[in-house]
Length: 214
Image (cartoon, one colour):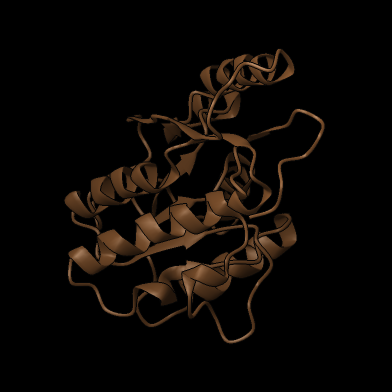
C-alpha cells in the first residue's frame, strides 16, 4: 500500500485502496443486487446492465479488470443475481460503451436485435439512464410494456418522465456530509484509522418496471 498523501484527502463515490486514504461510497454491490433481484422477481429472465465505461473488445470476461470501483461492484452485484437465478452467461449481459446518445442508441440497437433481447435494463448512472430512456422512445418502445428499466441515482428528471423511473436512491447528500466531516477530521489531525465508509441505498419504486410482456 502506498503511503498516505501529505495533504488531507477523502475520496467520494470511489475507492482506491492502494492510495491509503479514506473513501465515502454507496453500497454499490448491494444496490445492484436489490435492483436486479426486483426485476427478476417481476419475471424478467433477459436482462442487461448498460454502462458508459469504455467498451471492451470481445466483451467483459473478468469483473476484476474494471478499474472504477463503483462500476465494478455494481456489475458484480448484477451478475451475482443472474447466477443466483440460474441464468446463463451473465457476463454477456453487461454492455459498455454508452458514452453519449449516439453510442447508447447503438448499444440499444445491438441489444434489442439479439435472438433473445433484454426485457429489462439496469442503467449504471442517471446520464446513461436518460440516454436509454431517449433511445427507447426513438425506437418506438414503451416503458415498461416493451422494456422495463431501473437507473442508479434519483436524479430530478427521473420523477417527471412518463412513466416515472424506478431508481436506486444513493443518498448523495448523506455521502457528501459524511465525506466533509471526515475531511475536517483529517485536517484537524483527529486520530482515525483509514476507512471506507459505505452509505446504504434504497430502491424507489415508480412506474418503469412491470412483468415482461404485460
